Image (cartoon, rainbow, N blue to C red):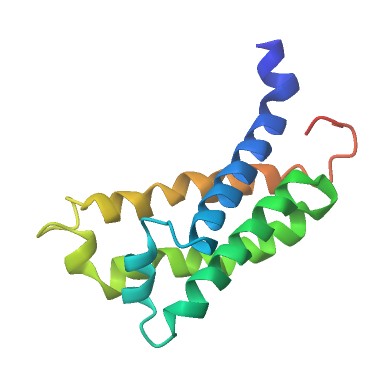
Length: 136
């Protein structure tokens, strides 16, 4: 219990950073399994620049979570990114659900798990003003 209290928030922040940096980097180098989903969701943008741009945006979010003084900026950048992430649930229901909103496809599950990332960011954001915890 003491370990969790001491390092839990730090590990949560680092985990969030790793996920954003890793998934963003995959978009930058053209190896993301989410590319097709992004392309179909925002078809009004040219994917040759938009997918890498989104990848850079995500890497920056991750880097902000690595450096505690930039966590607020990371959360600000995360808000529109997350809004875009949930768009396929509305714009592409045939791709994200199997006949019913109770049965998401693999793509739908990929999107819905972002609720955990969003909640993690909220927990981390709630500690930004806490000057006591150096490890947070």
